[in-house]
Image (cartoon, rainbow, N blue to C red):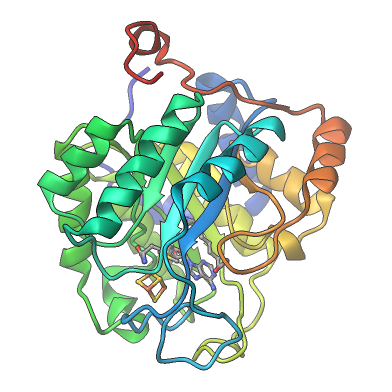
Length: 330
Ligand code: SAM
Ligand code: DTB
Ligand code: SF4
């Protein structure tokens, strides 16, 4: 089915500002046209290198310059990562996303080790995703050749608001990495965070940028800010469910074929609120008791929620079966 990359600001604004129940109804309709609405992609996150990051992202507990409770940890060993991936798989996850608190990838031994991790996780039949900061086209290609499926690199907020949140890199740096990822043939995972003090116009801007990329990101994480003590944004107001629903529903309508991921923030949401998010078009979650450094609902809680709502986990590599049969991923 067709998707559009020529959305205008006026159109996005009109959708975003619809009465919230009409917005959810429209998003739910689109969701059902493009996806099996009872299927939810289950992704597990693992921080493979924690803390000590040189960047100044105002929301992030891993930035070295803020005094948070996050301890710095060196890059994990390959076998530790593979053990964690197998456990995630046993718990029903089909995508495994490894995150590193780096500004960018460097061509060194550490990157060689990440390449081994990617190869190993791919070999157990999971979709592998990495989020390692900025990346050149050659590095993206190397990851792809090792069996990487997707690369996560969030726009985080609008171009207009970006300078209020991060000063150590530019919006164009972000877009450039997304281009490198796309050129290498990897799936792009890119979304943002709400609750950073941005306006509705900023949210509309970010959604417009994402939905007018030459190809929509394969997945779009929508994060609610996790307010972490010691970061400049620790005293931000909590994101309300209505703000989350507007973001998810608008993303679903603009990018109907993408996985819209209900990402950070579930720990503070009730099952009823999460159910509303699935209704509004969320088709994916991060599962497991930790995101990168902050808590997330545990596996049993999610199992109960899936049972209650009649949801089931989406299979790995869905829609890519031919490539799988060709031995590309296993
Ligand atoms: N360092 C790499 C980068 O920034 O691209 C990869 C890891 S970074 C932790 C990945 C993403 O986590 C960020 O882009 C941001 O969207 C999200 N994130 C970090 N801290 C968060 C917080 N406190 N609340 C919500 N999302 C957060
Ligand atoms: C994304 O959009 N959210 C995830 C993942 N991609 C890397 C990270 C959320 C991090 C929340 C704060 C933490 O746990 O450190
Ligand atoms: Fe570093 Fe990524 Fe955190 Fe920014 S979001 S401080 S780049 S780990």
